[in-house]
Figure 1 (cartoon, rainbow, N blue to C red):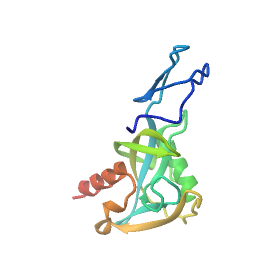
Figure 2: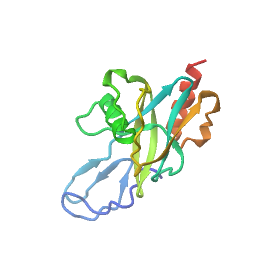
Figure 3: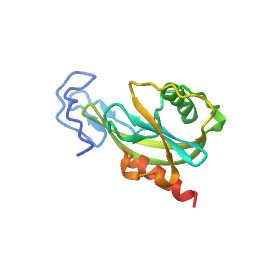
Figure 4: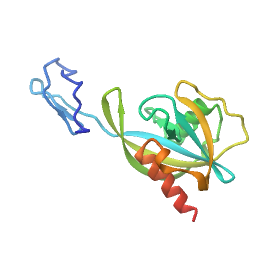
Amino acid sequence: NFYMIKSFKFCPNCGHSISEFNFRRMACPNCDLVYYQNVAAAVAVILRKDDKLLFTVRNKEPQKGKLDLAGGFTDPDESAERTCQREIEEELGITIPIENFTYFLSKPNNYEYKGIPYKTCDLAFIADFPDEEIVLEKEEIAAVKWIALEDIKLEEIGFDSLRSVVDNYLKSLK
């Protein structure tokens, strides 16, 4: 079960043994603490230049070696548009004005990291690629690939949510 978090064995409040953390909810039978693992917000940016989209190649698990869209998790007190801007700066070394990101759609996603399952809401945005040179953040990204719209193979994209985002984007162009 994706919701079962097996690595959380003790209450963070009183240290009592926890037998169950189900469906994002952990309840301590000793101190009555109830902890919820809520959905995390993340962004993905469709970067377009002429008839091509920019994909990154993941350099870390999950989905290492698979295609991805530039993006990442939203920090506390950060808007989704600022997340787009920050992640593009961090991953690609490029600055895009915040007003240049246009919301497209959202998709739920399962994201497992180091054995802990996270439920995310992936917010997809569209932006035109600026005329700047890419400087890769190599710890997270192995490479970038510009792929012509007609040559995109959805099965090469690592996450179900982003496959759906790209599929919907391609259909919106027809």
